[in-house]
Image 1 (cartoon, rainbow, N blue to C red):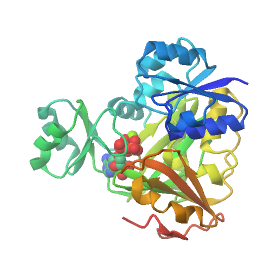
Image 2: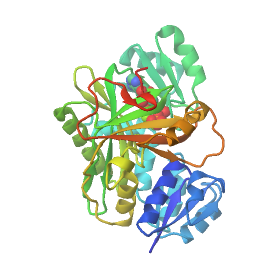
Image 3: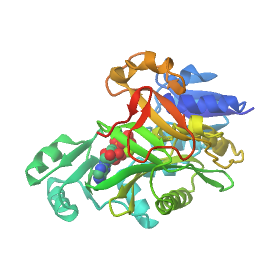
Image 4: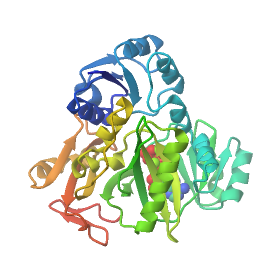
Length: 371
Ligand code: ATP
Ligand code: MG
Ligand code: MG
């Protein structure tokens, strides 16, 4: 009956804690506020800053194993924790995923293809980088970006000054714009004994830089799905992952797969697994970090997940809870601010029945109409 320590109080920690609780574990969260989504469902919590050594020590004393749901903690903080308790996944994985330069360097080193990219530290670098990756391209901060924040889409040379001035902190990476046919992701879990489990490839649609709708399985060929799974497996093994990780990918118009970024934690695009798989991404993660066996995935339905973001999507809530067959999940956040992920809703379909063209009809209308 060990205690799982979760760094971060957001919804990913909340749903991990709920899965842990169902397996008979207790959870202890370190979070900034008593009211955070993960704290609400955990057995106990340390409220404090992730870079406060005293808070980290209190947290570590209360737990048997540490995991994280939030990537923008200092890797030094995780190092402090790892001197006291096992940290899974390890701080070295977090270090790589926190920094787009290290991430792309790692992916390149294990032969996983990524979009052409260059590091940009100075305005002069930006000019050279633009020539190397070509227009249009995306300039991104190497650290702290999420939901498309910390990015600038550069159409032509006239925008270089503005792009460079807008983004901080430096360094940045310039990334060639991928003309993708589809964005997909793979949730891959790796156990303490090295067992790997990949969830079905997920098709993802974004709106305003935020994940809007995921469909599983992605409507791609078996060959492409196998390629995506193989990449996810190689990344998990290359990182010596213990836990779950989301691997975001682009499927190009000519059927090539590139990796965009990795997230060594449960991932928004894996929320469909909560209702379409006997063992979802959160349970898989808890099993991995506690050394339990990882069951096969066994998706029993096709699924569509719609994120509920901000006040606009929350306006649909009364209709969602009144609709047969929709499976709602709310994160317990009080204020529906613009762009804030408040919850999600899953819809299940018989296996093999997702329609061929985009736009899944539900009682809510087409879930995720093409943007
Ligand atoms: P997340 O919330 O997933 O962590 P993020 O802020 O780290 O997002 P990215 O995943 O790098 O940002 O980019 C956000 C979205 O912008 C991608 O899902 C994709 O739609 C688009 N995008 C990013 N990089 C590229 C690229 N090189 N070519 C084309 N589109 C891109
Ligand atoms: Mg990211
Ligand atoms: Mg992303």
